[in-house]
Length: 265
Image (cartoon, rainbow, N blue to C red; front, side, top):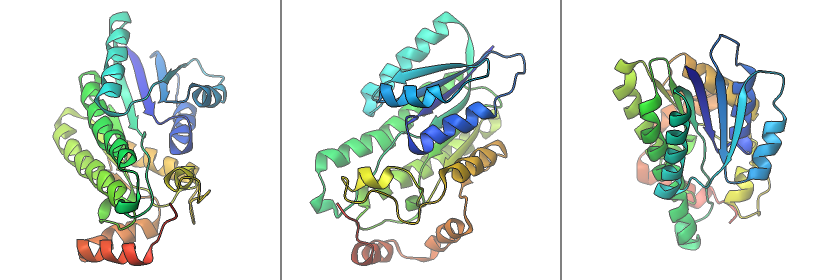
């Protein structure tokens, strides 16, 4: 039976790094393998795909806007069509599609915030749901959350809330799927050197401050996922921050970050 890997948000940043490392670790074990790279930009997807060569693994680029229920239904149709063409199991699902916005909620674009909720929450939920019938014992799900998931954050209110949802949903899903032998891991990175800040700040901050190497973040996450870890936090600082968030009042955390953690927008 063919083993399928699906990676959303695969055209850049952490998504593209997931593609590279997952492709590199594939071995020839007699099973046919295929990797789907999903994102909006066909050009960027093809650029990532061109980096991959030398292995008998099919790579399919899917230019698709996954936002909201409509995007999920489009992906569901693609899976059903693939099923009709031949049986397969989803060996690994990486839900990495998402984005953030900087600034006080009152000063951000409401339509943009709603789009973020659609992608970070609705799409994440829906993709997990439509993938479940194709998951078997040994399958894995990785959902990209954030270190921001552990505490409400001023100047980052909606993004932190969406990632709190992603973390909570992932841990609950891991509990529900444990008896079926399916592993679920929430990736909760702090600052990583990707294009995130440029998008979140509308171009006012070109690079993430003190960003960590995405190669190391993804490598740690894949290992954590294989080992059955429910949450992936690569650095000691991130683990300490996540732990200490238990002792900080939610309002205090939000108020402090609103006053002292300004973000260009």
